[in-house]
Length: 242
Image 1 (cartoon, rainbow, N blue to C red):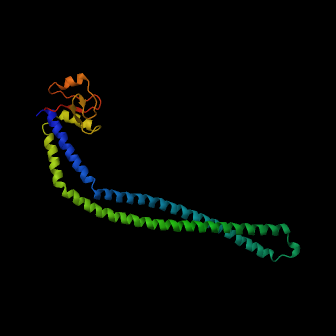
Image 2: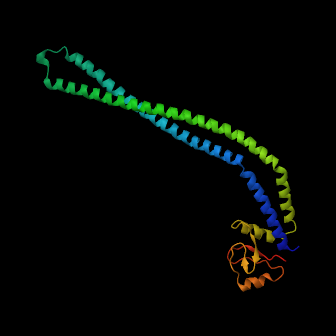
Image 3: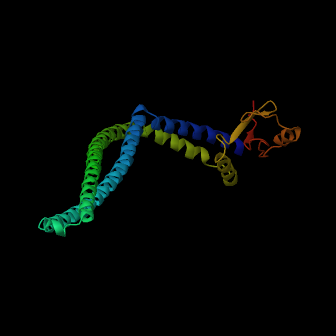
């Protein structure tokens, strides 16, 4: 058996192994496993966003509470001033001062009402956020439970197929024995860009890309021991002896 015949058999053994490996990875159990993993990761990301929003809302609430403390302090000072004014005689009172005090009282009252509404709105948003956090944690917990169960099932599937998998790997190793290392390196280099690095010559065309080959390439293929690549797809051309 020449090098190209051996390499062709190697490709067949390798394809059989890869097909079987894909079948193990594409079982329904495996698909469900990946789906649960995606659910968990999606909710994990959502949880991070909710936690960040909750922190921002808490900071905003603290900021408004601080503003209300300032207004409360101003109102306390104003009450002390009003208490002092309440002892004045009519002749000692100035109308502008009274008007200014009334205006300040109204401003303080309005400011507190606005802050109260803001606080109520933020508290509702925090409550909603906390509810979403709890719901997200439940979804993550359920996804983790399902994931662990499916992972165990998939491990059993892998174990059940281990015997066949080992045989196919052994076939690949056996098929690789005796192939020229430089030719194998060339094969693996092509495989990085093309599936099935070898392609049959069918008539005057490359079976891989269906391109018609120039007469010069066809002549080179007739020389025993020549390794010729398709000028279009770069695959190693193989002439099957009839």
